[in-house]
Length: 197
Image (cartoon, rainbow, N blue to C red):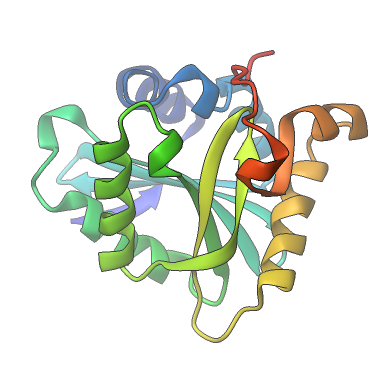
């Protein structure tokens, strides 16, 4: 199996066939936003190929030099439970070596499916993720912040990169309305709002 970047046409196809059925609206970045980031060279839509078949995707938003937001991991529905998720992460870490990759995984007690959220967190931890000392809420979804790094990373540095990623794409008004980094329950449960809004 090999890893390569998707073309624009392929991104449109996997978005419709793999991502849209797999992620709730509040967690799925609009396709036009992904394509805009790709045109800027800031978005790396990696795919895992079995021969010529695309069997999974791992998308990274390079928000600033040396820092990448691990945006989506998705295995093709017909290939789930084949161990491809672990392979995708391993190959992604090779492809994006030298960077700190950070991501967001639903806080189980606030997730619609807490058991699934716990399994997802356990999967990421088995595959090298460390949990940061802060959580975030993005478009009303509470997340634990996870990261992969070759060396030590402080919460302050990670939080700075995390905030910078969203501030680079949203107005100050939109950022204040939709993004909370850090977030905890004492701030209140955020309202879920689809990305498209």
